[in-house]
Image: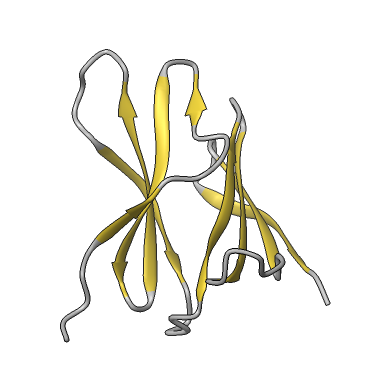
Length: 101
């Protein structure tokens, strides 16, 4: 069965009038996007490569002026967090990655 595109709304997804969310692109990637509350179009910020592991999803998303922080973990609702990534909004690059055991 073909993969269906789905939006995955996350906790902490609203910041200064913009709504931030993740959208599954395919089995191996998730896109972080936002929509302005002023009615502007949907914009893509960056894509997260999930290393073809379809059992991983974005568990949380937090946005600030300087960073977007997201947690990755198993698809199961009660599964824990395996990795936290801090993405710098000014440089457009990953600032830090924290792996949990």
